[in-house]
Every structure is written in C-alpha cells, then in structure tokens.
Length: 184
View (cartoon, rainbow, N blue to C red):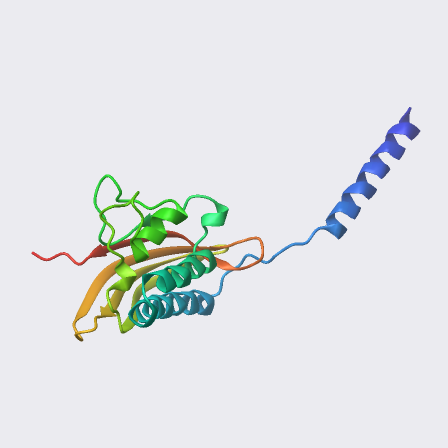
C-alpha cells in the first residue's frame, strides 16, 4: 500500500510541475513611471476628444471616447468605481462603460443630464499629484487635475485614481473619483 501511495504522490507532483511549467505568469507589479504615463495619456485623450468634437462632431468624438474608455479603464474586468466631477443623484456613480461614455460625450437618453464633459473644448490638461501610493499590483494617486478651457480659464478638480494591471499587463483605471475644489 505504501508503494501505491508513493507512486500516486509522485504522479500528482509531476502533474503539478507540468501545470506550473505550462502556465504564464504576468508580473503585476506597477512602476511609478507607468502610473504617470497613464495619467498623462488620460489627459491627452480628454483633449483629443474635445478637439475631435470641435473638428468632426459628436459622433466622431464618441468613437474616440469609446476607444479611450476601452484602453484606459477596467470595465472589461468588472465594475469601475467612477464618480465623475459633475454628476448628480440618481446617476452620481458610473460603474458601467455606458455610464462613463455618456458622462464624457453625452447623447445617451438613459443619462439625460449628461452634456459631455469631454466636449467642453478643453485645450490642456495637467496632473499635479499630491502623492502616488504603490503597493505591488495596485497604485493609487491623489492630487489636482487642471483643465484649460477654450477661453483660457483653468478649472481645477481634486482627483483620485486607482490603477491595477489586467491579465495582459495593461494598466487599467478601476477607481476614479473627481470633485470640484471646496469653495468656502
């Protein structure tokens, strides 16, 4: 009986080693440079959506916004914890791709109060982090984002982002909270 148990254990160990040898392990660690690059890409995408809207209209801006959301956010992984700057109840939080898209470009009757934040003619977007916290496979940032409008006026918001890597190693926004600065 001991020989059968020993042979059985050896077979299990061999199978486990083969499974490990055939698996792909993605390093999910995040570097600060990746986070800063992702933030700058988000800002660049927002300005691109605004410029596309100005030159080609809402439909073209929506196409760009869809590609941006699919590339930057983690909606394909599940709900994203997105609280945009200018939303109100009952649609304050945008945990679905459709809700995020409507916030950025409007035009969705399911979100009648959305006029399209990204369509406001932004000419510049700058990130000013107060801090970046990285813990292995996630990174959280908090700070200000400054948006320059078509009239040159700057609007600043308080912004927190959380990033994780998907199975392919692509950095994804899984939490995004934005609010206007407190005005006493």
